[in-house]
Image (cartoon, rainbow, N blue to C red; front, top):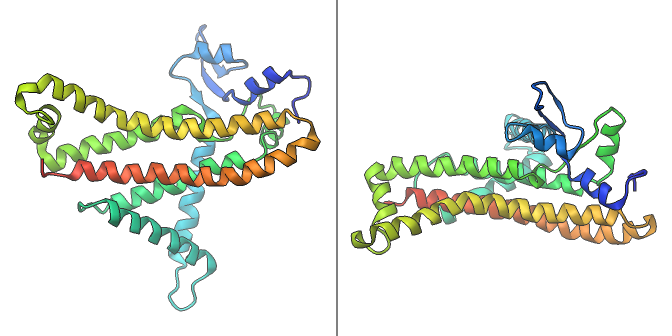
Length: 274
């Protein structure tokens, strides 16, 4: 454990604190040096570690998949090309099975959300002290390496999906059709306020459930890794290795669930029969 003189409680709080940049109450901008300072910065502060890791992982995804596409060969496909094609086929199969509309954007959206979330979740398998210790040597006081353990990241993705749901709901059904869907179902025009309440809650629950499900599972997994890191060294490996192997399933499963719900929600936005 690389906690130094930190107590167990301080060690946990340190590893759960984001590298935060924002405006201090006196008007100057800078990095927070404690959780209290980060709180003082308010809503408009930036979690630099979340933004940085998510951007780098997204860029790596685009780079390697674009490279595989450019070097694709029918006669002599490489192992990486076969790997990428298997992922694309997997995504395409799920889209065709869950999406009944016609929208060429849905499959790329599903692919992007799945791979990006897998990469961000996989950062949870990096030993909890490695990257924080490396960056601490460069003067970085706090560092959270798993973007999906930050609700700002998960809500950012889910709100983006929610905007697409609203856009395609209005585009496919018309504004009147979308409003009618919210107010006339399931009990007809005589129960309009009650219908609107039920449908409104159902609509708003989509981005909330997407964000909290992903955040909650990854945050819990990261917390267990941190707690294991507090144990004596000779116990750590006997616990961390089995948990890491099991956590691989969680990493993939949470990305798959997020992707599947995105496809289902987009399909619901395209349905016109009501």
